[in-house]
Length: 425
Image (tube, rainbow, N blue to C red):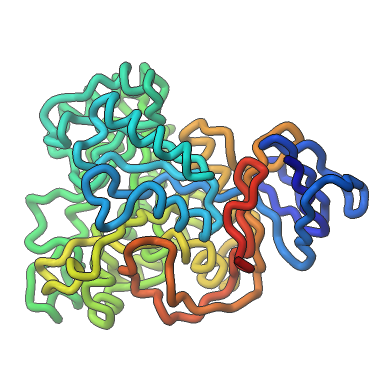
């Protein structure tokens, strides 16, 4: 099968290619890249990308597809459809499924099902058995069966000795560890910032110290062990400073931020209730601006959605009972364009690098660039088109961004040389 994408403006931080090009794909790979008009393939399907940007397919290294075990919220098929609609051609599943991905059988189930979706579905395996934080998984075997990293995301690791041992083993396997950093001992009610939002709901909330304390511990352990780690969904300005200092010391650390954390503050929890409840919580405007500054100076090198679907009946519960998390795959690129590029904080190429090239490099997957012989995985979008999210490919609808006017619309997603999403269909 051949696909010819004509007249698009290529924006590729992976190869530093910018400018109008035609791209010919064949059998899942990019066969040729040429100046506009330089490719003539009569037997190819043609997609006219005039006035559109053609970027490498987006890569999300932090998604929850709830499969197996919680498929009333999402499953691998619907999660992949949501990803394709958002311009993502590669995603990495988190391991807090039921059963958890602490064994080869569950890992194989996820990867086998992912291969049928049309996009590239990878998975992290658990750091500890059953996410109980007490006994390490067989990391070597899980790598053999396809795990691209290790995480207990959803449940923080409280035992520093377990973390240290995990770092040693992950380093030996040359795979990253990603950490959900919230000390439960300091939290009275999770998902809501301790401050204005917690006062509004008259609850204890989650203080910034819960994040800061575990980040400080794990950065010190990473310096000691030499492990490659990722600090997930950071929310506090102090965390940005800690990571900046760690990078100066040579720590092999990567920092991730979500679109909701660089777009919203705790005011959103007051306005939208449980649809803006998440772990870690939305914090202050000062924190939001510090996260953006971290994106600008490279301290934060990855933007990930933490796509966390929940059923409407679950989110309809009171603020202290409803689960934390929001969906994000279908609005992520637009939020980056609207709140980062259009505001002058990042260039388009810098945004794409943090949403594609960098996460692909961290997890050593073949993605995040456009080159002859490389994967025919592309995100084609209109950078100036405004739209309002009101329906989703995801099974769940839990997001505060429904009804918001956003700028930047995915027009088509190409994975393996096949158009897996088209806005026209």
